[in-house]
Structure formats: C-alpha cells, structure tokens
Image (tube, rainbow, N blue to C red; front, side, top):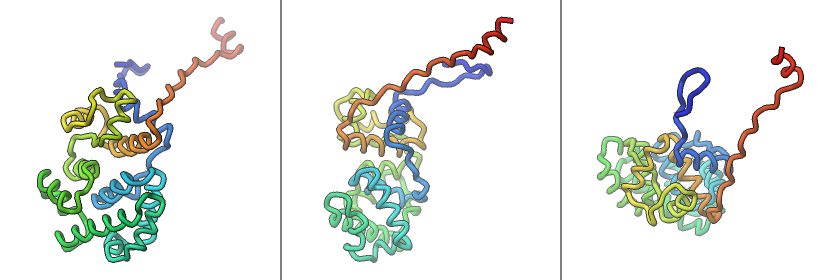
Length: 230
C-alpha cells in the first residue's frame, strides 16, 4: 500500500491495470458513448474483432449516423451495409453476418434489441448467440458482462498471446478459469477497452511497450531555497 500525504492509502495498480494504462497511452482513449445498449455492444464487438480499431469506431459511428436504428440495418440491402464496412477484409461477408444476426434477433423477440436476454440465464444467452450465426465468444462474453455482470476478461488466441508477451499472463492458451481470474485485476468498466487495445496491439505484432518515464523531482528555485534557509 502507498501512503498519501493526507494519511489515506492508495492501492498499487495491478499488472493488468498498468498494461491497460500503457496501451491507452499508445492508442488513445476509447470513446464508448455511442454504445448505449446490449445490441450496440454486440454489433460493436463483432465489428472491432474484424476491423482495425480506428476503422471499427468509424464504421460503428457510420451505422449510427446513416441508419435510423438497427432494424433499418436489418432491412437494408447487403450492399448498403457492406459500404459501411468497406475498410475491412471481406466486407460483404461481415455485412451478411450482421444482417443475419439482426434477423435472428427479430425472429426470436419480434423486436430488434437484446434487452429481453436480461431475464435469461447465462447458459440460455450463450445458446441464443450460438444459434444466431455462431457469434464470436469474445463478443458473447462482453455482452454477458453487460447483461449479467459476468466476471471475465474475454480473450482469444491472438489477444492472449499479446497479453502473455506483455507479461499479463503466463499460460500458453486462454482458459475460462484464467479469464475469470483476470477480471479481479481490473475494474469492470475497463474490460472492454482492454480487450479492444489488446486486439489492436496484436494486429500490430504485439511490440514491447515503453516504460513510463520516471518523474524527476522538481528543482527548487533560488528564491525558494533562500526562504527555506532562513
């Protein structure tokens, strides 16, 4: 524990919090203000897994700006949806996946939204996503964090390898037990940004992060020195 001048104590940052801080310094803050509900989160998670981070934000904001809601995306042509995702690989494939997923949501609930899943169990929610086009596990777990306060830091092979290179884990491959353990090392409201940062860092080859420069103590001015010596 580190004592403060006011007598209170501050908890030393965990390894995962330190990694998050360094990644945030490298890639900039993640503005998640447009992600307002579970369906937003599900779509954004899918996009961010398939596009570079900056392009994922641009595409998500384009969906928000150019379509009334996700129902309009559902009924729009594949070409219109594809145009929003043009910066990524195989934009048509991703456009069709999103449209099919939204159609599945509509068929199950007669409404394009995922709030109805709040009353489902974790197992039932996983089953829903599995049937809805084999949604990526990382995206499912991120939605579970929102819907059920599920304690997990979702990792896939590439982000786990990235985190290992940064010193955040020691195992060779991600396990559910390990991902749950990691959740105790970082606030829940930083898990999504950590996952995004790791994904982007993995795309860039997982380079080593620079150590934060140590802050030098401020030099006393001549005037202050004279005053102190009196």
